[in-house]
Amino acid sequence: MGAAPKSAHPARAFRYVEAWGMTVGAYGDVFLPRSRAELVAALQLAREDGRPLGLRGTGNSYGDASMNSRGPVLDISQMRRILDFDPETGIVEVEPGVTVRQLWRFLLPRGFWPKVVSGTSHPSMAGIAAMNIHGKNNFAVGTVGDAIVDFDLLLPNGEFLTCSREENADIFHAAIGGFGMLGIFARLRLGTKKVYSGILEVHAFANHNLAEMMEYFEEHRATSDYLVGWVDCFASGDSLGRGQIHRAHYLPEGRDPDPDTTCSLAYQDVKPNLFGIIPKSELWRPMRLINNDLGFRLLNFAKFQQSRIEAMGDPVLWTHNEFAFLLDYIPNWKWSYGRRPGRGLIQFQPFLPKESAYDTYCEILRRSQRAGFVPYLGVFKRHRPDPFLLTYAQDGWSFALDFKVTPSNKERLWRHCGELVELVLDAGGRFYFAKDLVLGPGVVERMYPEGHLERFLELKERLDPDEFLQTDLWRRVFAGVR
Ligand SMILES: Cc1cc2nc3c(=O)[nH]c(=O)nc-3n(C[C@H](O)[C@H](O)[C@H](O)COP(=O)(O)OP(=O)(O)OC[C@H]3O[C@@H](n4cnc5c(N)ncnc54)[C@H](O)[C@@H]3O)c2cc1C
Image (tube, rainbow, N blue to C red; front, side):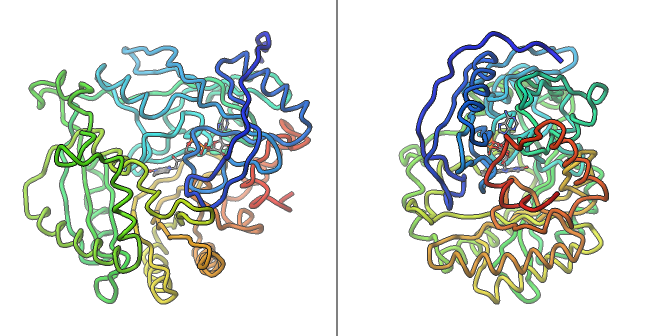
């Protein structure tokens, strides 16, 4: 354990803190430390406040994972320095508020790329570690936890602990994926990947149903760097689960004649205007016109037809930025779901073992269509097990489904998702806290490998006996679990 640095004065603000999906939010006190010393001081001030403390990165969890409506929030987004990088090993050392975007922009001109990234580039290093995020390459390289070398954790008692696979290994495997319930990530070191080009070779395939999608993934899994499927959730009958798969590969050394250019930020940066004139930052406004069942049915249909044409062509070259962060292409697209309280979206992402995945996902789609809750976006991925205590991934699949939320459909939608949760648990499935807003008590007891939850709760009891670290997610899902 290291000694805590001298105290300082962190900035403090009274702010609206909301879920990324905008469906829940609350005003509250927010601490904004900029340094390790201010982090310690913020923890001390929060202790004096007497209420539980919630941790927040850049607020990109769809649900209430980084909200704390019963106390202050400690937001680490101002601690955003890249501290060190070793080009020999590819290991980078960062403060917890460094974002994925900041990291790739630092790494790529040096010929490296983060091993695991999310579909948006805005999350922080602490946030991705606390949720143990996965990318479109989960089946190949595991979760971000597999890329983390070590970290410093500021414990609720004010002491720093360095954790790695060798040192405090139990806490290392619990804090990664531990959704900020054991301590505060204050510094992290991660391995990165050497790349020989700023572009990826991407193959597109149009699948006519879910079975075809799964077969394609299995056939190409051993030889692909990335695989991701988009599903038209409106298609039914024989076309249930139809969509498009993108399969990508890094270019081998020597294939790109000018890697310095393709790895440059100028080459990677996406143009801010559509057709050179329409600012992409304003596109969410016209998108409101199609943000309804009919609009998305037509959009999904058109996208599927376009993917059939795309699939007939040769593989195409995409920049890393374009391929990895497709969801950032239209800034603030979520606002098209409505910007008034109670409106927005939730994501429901069940993870299923390979044995039960096909039947369960088909049933989820059928039931959602019957109930009149067709997801506007469906994303399919392949996963593999990982060694972390609160692991959500397994040898199987995930299907992320975006549901629109309005004040009038909320109650029915939650009931519908509750039924789907039972279906998933009965099929041996799991859920991912970064995406969740619908789980209730009694779920976590049924979803982890044997002994994992108990070991996590023992650590919570040891490191945070008075449950100082809490979020709305913790109270919602872990209420009564002891
Ligand atoms: C459009 C979109 C696409 C996404 N795509 C993916 C994807 O492809 N794969 C994937 O896995 N996820 C994905 N996500 C989810 C996202 O990556 C995670 O929710 C991630 O945790 C967000 O990081 P954040 O910095 O915003 O953290 P927040 O959402 O602010 O917080 C996340 C968790 O980290 C905890 N935390 C924050 N700071 C600390 C700290 N210093 N120490 C300890 N705990 C802390 C919080 O308490 C909370 O539990 C996506 C999200 C969006 C909005």
